[in-house]
Length: 498
Image (cartoon, rainbow, N blue to C red; front, side, top):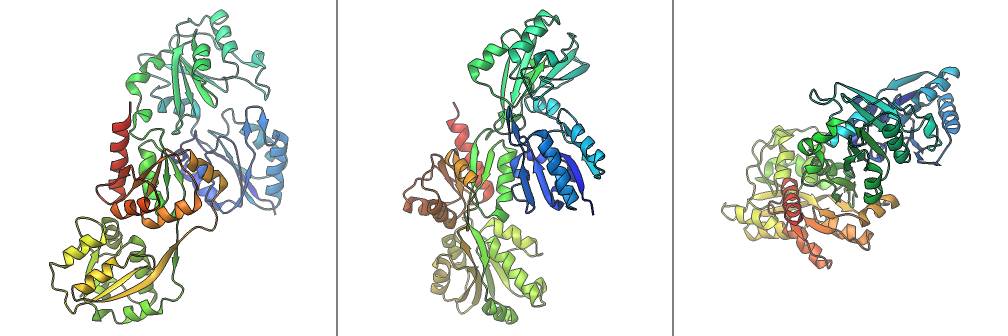
């Protein structure tokens, strides 16, 4: 039985610019064949077969004929194949040629368009391709037509029109020749504004503006490299007024997130929105205790407890999952008061239809103990489901106040079995490494020998662990939450910017 091939446009680079359909197909694929310009984070978590066939300049992992054969062979195995291509498959992406080969072989295929870099990269640089005051039309030109980028005579050069925008793709290698042709043969004024956008829509984005006459000299001076889009016309003059992407407070900063893979997404998303390049480096994995009979026994007798105390989101989720497993639900807790150490745990609790009765101003065990000291908990029974790695501070403090505490270990945090070498290399060049717990600190430095970036801590306990490991926390959140950590990062880089 034949499979099917989906020619999917990955978009220009920002992983959030792929279509909903394209993302769904990646999740459903048996095999993904992806290009150099397809953002790696789109495939990094996939569990299917991944095959890289990228072409970087003249350096080709596979020839186009080999890529075509690979697609056909995987489809003939009955697989659902995603051919993931940068930008849009049918815009200078050889998607048309690949579709022809599939049609010849009788292989079913579907084309999923993607956002093209020809307009999105300029947009991220603050350069609109059209504008009523500057351009009512545009032309998109390939800087070369064949794999040999030196074939400048193959380029279909446009005639100059002051009311048009001209966009060249894959033209960096031929830039000097393009300039000469346009000025000498196509009557382009030497002072035509030109913008070059390298790695458009990504945190590594660089933008250069100059005149047509000087652009090749400026590219050489600034060492601007492909992949890049070349934009020509009056719209380029809008760049300084309309730039928005590279004005963001964390733009271009490489920030390492060390939370668990499941918990990293919110912090990563916030940092990406602020312009950062995020490297997810999960230094801990949450492992549920294999034997939870002690917890189940406590749940069966939950009405004997006066207080339920949570110290983390993980504890909240595992507690309720086990509660549901034994046929109970949130109504069982109707007569029990609930305390949480942090805002994140409180927010997680709300997912189960409950609100905490007690939450401290500072999200550490010591602050929660202080809160409890103002309440009479003598002889009160407190259930404390928590990590096996948790400090004994909370239990000891509550017992000193006269409470009967049943501390039950329901999970532990462990180092991941393996870290990708590529991620390890990226960490070494990071601007900041963020830590959200003592476990992330200890596991990170057990894995990584050296790192040149500054260290950012979510709070004093994590900072204390950093100091014990011989490192300084240059950034410590004043509010011990993810929001507080992000705010501290913004403040730090606002102060250190030249």
